[in-house]
Length: 167
Image (tube, rainbow, N blue to C red; front, side):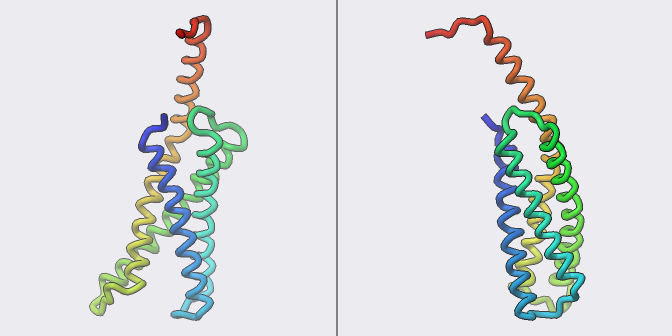
């Protein structure tokens, strides 16, 4: 049975994938309709950040499906796990910066327009940062968790050898 914290980890990966997709699509539509002034560098960086978040969540979910509950990470899966950790750490820094700038712009100014799409987006990005931080913390725990579960499974298998099944 999988502990609740790991079920939350899986749910948060799905949620982060969903929200990154929605924000990316909303951003692409806003840029294509020329809503606001978007410098080209900001457009490229924003699209890249959300695409990388989607990639990292996809890697996490694939590893979760293939390796959890008791298969250790080895070879290619360990490399992909490392790639996911690096991507999530880099994009977390970018999102945290974006959230702090957006929140200070939206709620720190005298003419704040609470209730607008910008304030909702700023709060959503801040929540994404918190969810992503939870995922990053658990990313560092994945190898140890899987190694311990595999060890426990092997001990149970060895202990069961030679015992007669009770009927």
